[in-house]
Image (tube, rainbow over all chains, first blue to last red; front, side, top):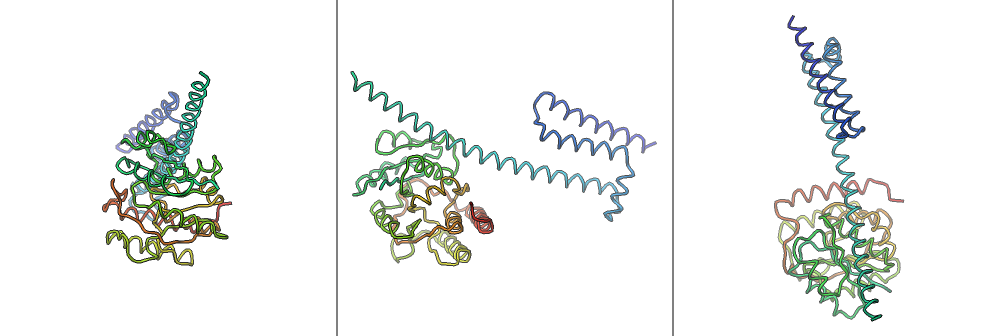
Length: 126
Length: 234
């Protein structure tokens, strides 16, 4: 009985998580690239909520005596992977911001020079 | 021969005008470019009011690497033959520029580093600073297979080939000087050191505070190591 209740709670939580991700994509708050990652996480939760034998199997395979520890291990590995991906994305954006800032600075200098030159030209004509 | 002095400046209002004036009176034809790295003080206004230097006013703070790279891109776009990198805090002396240019004009020299340590005397920095510089000297000498004394000196001269390369590949970290040396040598550039005198900074604060020194060293050493194991840029 307890087992069934856990199954229902865990499945509902997973479904709620999937729905949250789905809504974020629908409202364009989440790019598809990241959305796939989080949808994968949601499906992962759902599968392990329903198919509990899989957890026991993985735990046995990895030599873990206490199956829930296997779940935590998988979660932590997943989270670390996600965070590394975020670091990669942040680094890439930093480079893009750098290039944009440089280009903007150079353009502003050029624009300032052009404006000054045309001011001088028009005052010389007078 | 057209020569551009690139001065990366972050909040150097106390010293920047004097630095530009000192460069203007030297008997060399130098164009001066100040790259303000998102300064929040009067640096940009003061330089503009002086009318002697071109200003690139970066919208946000990129760290010195990003500011210097903007200078190289400008030099490339405006077809300069030579770039001098010069500090905005008064540490570097304008009368030493001619010496750097002379060494740069020798056959096969791509980059000249103004070194504080080739002659004794002159300004000595703090103990921890000297320790860090010494460590960088050992690491870089090991990787480069030759001795380069002053890896942190920002007082440097570059020829056209180096300008072209650095406009694209300048190290994007906060304190790029030691990494720049490894990057250049790894890509087949010939770096020569020449002795210069330097003054203690005239104002402002060093961008490397004591508490951050460790972080600085770790970051620089990692960057040097990674630069060394990467294949040369095509």
